[in-house]
Amino acid sequence: MDNALTLLSFGAEGWGDEIAYGTFITISLALATLPLGLVMGFFLALARQSDEPSLQTSANIYITIFRGLPELLTLFIVYFGFPIGLNLIVHDLLGYEIIDVSSFLAGMIALGVVFSAYASEVFTSAFKGISQGQYEGGYALGLSNFSTMRLIILPQLIRLSLPGLSNLWLILLKETALVSAIGLTDILRSSGIAARVSKELFLFFGVAFLIYLVLSIISSLGIVAIERWSKRGEGLR
Amino acid sequence: MSPSENTGVVEFFERPPPQAKKWSKARILGIILLGLWIAAGLGLIYYLFAAYTQEFADKYALKFLRGIWVTFQIVGLSLIFGALLSFPVALGRLSKNRLIGGIAFGYSYLMRGTPLLAQTYLVYYGLGSFNKELQAIGLWWFFRDAFNCVVLIFTLNTAAYQAEILRGAIENVEKGQTEAGQALGIPKLVIFWKIVLPQALITALRPYGNEIILMIKGSAIASLVTVFDLMGETRRAYSRSFDFQTYIWAAILYLSVVETLRRLWDKFENYLTRHLQRDSE
Image (cartoon, rainbow over all chains, first blue to last red; front, side, top):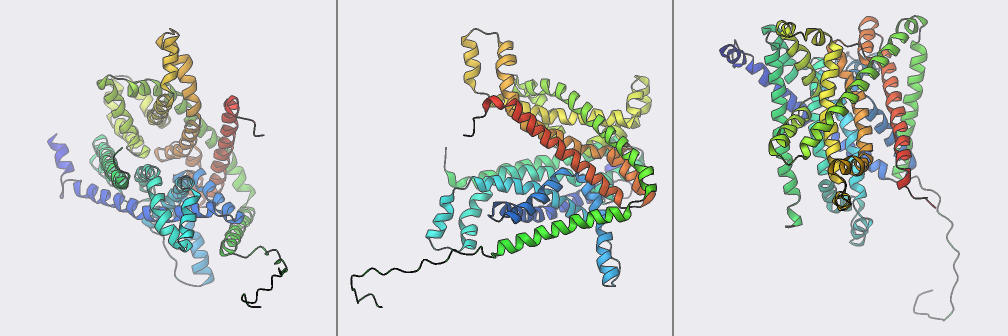
């Protein structure tokens, strides 16, 4: 038991600080991916909502591809394929230095793309929950399309899509574990290194498991609070 | 003519010509995006043709097929065992006994609140490090093989998700159905088995389909613990050939498997719920 505590301590002998850094990386990756995925997902949903068939088809192709591919494969394709494609343009055509895509950026792009495909589904069904009269109300008040969206539709849309989005956040948090496969020292990789060096595999992978569990519990509590906040205007039922 | 000069004569105006379909911003954007997709698709086909060599096909085509078979095995076994295990868990979640309910909830939360990859590492590397103890109780043969570990943890994982699907579906069946059964004097078990469960399973069809697809996608994780499923074969082929087309082929294979399955499942669902559909006339 003492041995385990020494191994987990912060400092030269313990792995606590490395794992804490890994936790920081995991949380920042998830937080950096979230806005990217949300914004792209919103625009995808808008494209699916539009009357223009070509716009709908483009959005549907995107969603079909990124919902059908395993996240791990998307990650590898972005991590290995992006530099190839990028250097084809940057190095061969423009003659600049070769760019290296960091594993953090690759993780952010891959997870963001997958997140946006799922988020667009949530937003699409939330759009369906807003009646046509809301748009007409905005038109009657002389608001521009953009103002109608910002002042009337978006506030309702956020409330309707919160349950779906909070579910996606929990999934995103868990999917960040995949970036350990492309060498980003997140929770799983830092504890994996600790496990192999110290030969205490069960201890360290157990710690990683528990950290993810704690992050999920904290997220769930946060989500409950946000949902209560979003319903504050609905009054007591 | 100004409005003040009211002559009482109704003037007829030419009807304006029908509006030509405008090149709105959305239309321009949509056509550009669609053009980009078409270009990307053509580029991909060109790339695959250019990169194709007989040597590559001879070397890896069969391995890819074997990989798909391993993926199917992992997913199939986990889903079946998971479905069996999900029944007691779902019943536990529905139970009024707080201890049983608590245990079932804890299990389900533990499995759904942590990444599948962390669970897989914990079982394969973590439990695997107790090889002496496992040898002593005669279970080492099971945990020595990565395939078994992966099926075990995928089963435990999908059982938790399937239990939630089942619980939600059972709770969704109207209470009146149970009460009607009670009024007819039907035993409790028969009410559950013959009245509640069939109706619950129909609402559970869609989430079950999603779960199958999630499992196929999630099974790619098995490649990280030395199992040579489709993803594992892809990674091995890439590490030997450094040819990026391995990943493209894997993407095409995964996408076609998932899309085919999704469409088949939709058909299956339509078939099973055909008595609930109204004629669209």
